[in-house]
Length: 189
Image (cartoon, rainbow, N blue to C red; front, side):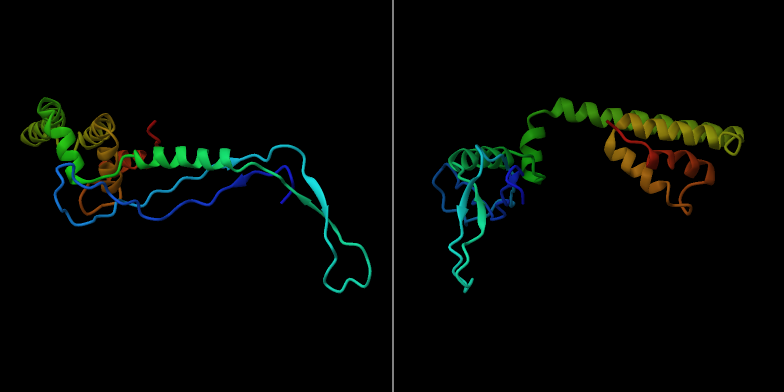
């Protein structure tokens, strides 16, 4: 590695002990999910050259010149500690966390559930109307495009459902598969 190259510290992969309950209870020791962080450190100052003593039976020749970096590692260690602290606060999926977070926001949960039911329910009603009018075959392309737009509007989870359906010809007609396959090519920002 050249003297001006970046040094990347290796991640810490060990489990982080979970905090004990505040009430002093004797809960079994648990381990939180492992976390990791990478920190980049740039060497400071020019490398110093040191002569290798040539001990290895060099036959009386002088040693080779080896560049040695003299770097204060304290700043790197502090940067890694900050990165680990950020990683410790990263979102991790746990049912308990979701229950605590959304248990205090019932209106938000109800609003999202209503949004999903209205979007998919209106689509289902349109399918029933098409079927009762005998136009279900004529409107397949139109309904497929509408379903794609609904999934896109509802967010990444529903886009993923649409992507899954786009690979299932046993569940969806070909017109729906064509429209839903567009979700495979799109990136949501």
